[in-house]
Length: 508
Image 1 (cartoon, rainbow, N blue to C red):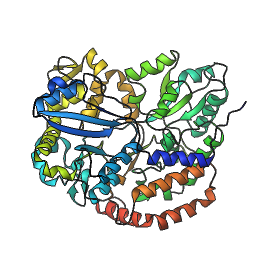
Image 2 (tube, rainbow, N blue to C red; image 1 turned 180 degrees about the vertical axis):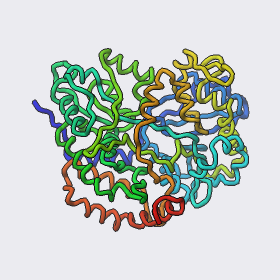
Image 3 (cartoon, one colour; image 1 turned 30 degrees about the vertical axis):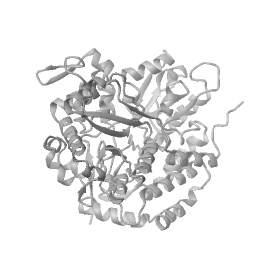
Image 4 (tube, helix red, strand yellow; image 1 turned 60 degrees about the vertical axis):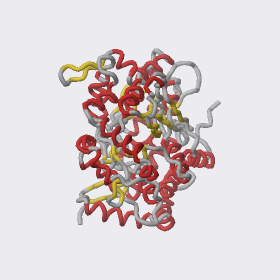
């Protein structure tokens, strides 16, 4: 019996709303066996961030070293999903109970918390962090500004990753070639859904999955536009700043995505996938194409998971599919954003000892010694030094996969990845060199009266309606009118264009 592959939109919208409003994502708070490091009088520091499914191990050697060296007791609360995490932080801010050090999810989130009076202005404290300020550099540090005040400490470095991955063994089973165009991608996804690619005699596979609209990043890119998410809409085209929502190719891109949905080749839970849900389905052999970054699929520990489920499985990278005119882009990269924005609650100005310890910690992590600890682990255990060259040991490969959760100051991205994951260097380089649209949203501060969260939620809900056929694309202009009138989007765009013009983007 043919499966019902497309949800009713009422359920889709409910699930999308649930994704955006839930506060109960999987989270973990641990001290991870560091009791021996806790000296009497140590300063307890609570840290919160998005973990994307990474957990802290028992016997956490990074925590133990930092606790002992800094005289602290560092406890991390990890939430696997970004939407869950942001809502959790908002609830804590409303009750004046924010963590001592926490990640904000982007510039709009930072601005919202800063304007509510929840955050400490760190401008006068930067001088206490000379190693950090030198390591990050002014171009990075200014990304943490709101109204010319330093409300966040940006992480140095920015990952350039994500592309489609596909089951090569499924292609081989069906005697198909890796798809090179959007039309070929649809044809392969259809074959993966209907032609029993895993040869188990069951109608139990789908073509493509991912996390919500991120699933379709390369399809948007095939039309020379970006996805619809926060932080990915503004870019320069032909010398002018444009917005993907107003781009003439947007309707065409949405119509193409609707073809995938209508063909029944898309994971029916795609709009509610969060955390590792999409990846889990791919690893379990339920889906043959996924939009993912190399670290989540080809690191040794990840390979062990999907090979354990199916020893014959073989995942390979795809270049982004070409659109009708040959355009291809894997996804966008927000050059105004950073690898992360760390904020400190305003209440800590009344707790100078704790505040100084936090600043001292971040500054230490920007030094060569501190940086090596949180990047590679323990010297002569997880890595050795050959002069200044770091060489990862077998134990480092096995035990140091979580240490990025302590990289509060950031890292020199390319050198770090090549050093730590030498066996995956070709995959890292492949994704780093893919064509991407450079977006500018990270530079823009929202004007008064504009609520970015509400606007982005409305955009996402309406996009779901368009691709699931509950709103016709002939209603797209009406959608834009509502966005402008009800959500003050025209005001936002006028302000954004002016701000970006001052930074030298777009013609006068």
